[in-house]
Image (cartoon, rainbow, N blue to C red):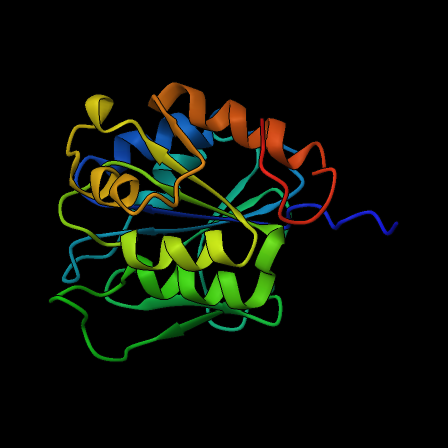
Length: 201
């Protein structure tokens, strides 16, 4: 029996309250975290983002604002720039200025859809605090492709809309308080399923 591949990418979506939540998750990850981390955080489209700089102060690995066609790198957190959609394709980051979705750009669902298509069972999708429903539709795609899905416990979220919508899909494997999300990511990427698509205990 062929051993399944390890997780290669963690896709994270957040909105209102997400800057603080991302700090908690990112600082929990070791410098040699085996997977690439790609983040869509809803930001003010009219101002330059300093989020990468803020997260880097507490991160043990690299944190950067994504640039078009840059390769994904294990142990590196890549953040969507303001007012640009972020996808992954063939191991690289893709930025676009295509149409707003529900008046927003970037949009978490686009990232999740691309991650599910490119990485399948080697992907983890995470929804953190945020208003609205972004991420809920395409967290189904990550789950359906054999990946693992995580949502912040809505009762612990500053804004429970996004994690609540994700949980309501029935496609979330782990619903956890914020401080447990980083440690479970470390645990997941450090071991393998008994076979592709097998549930986690």
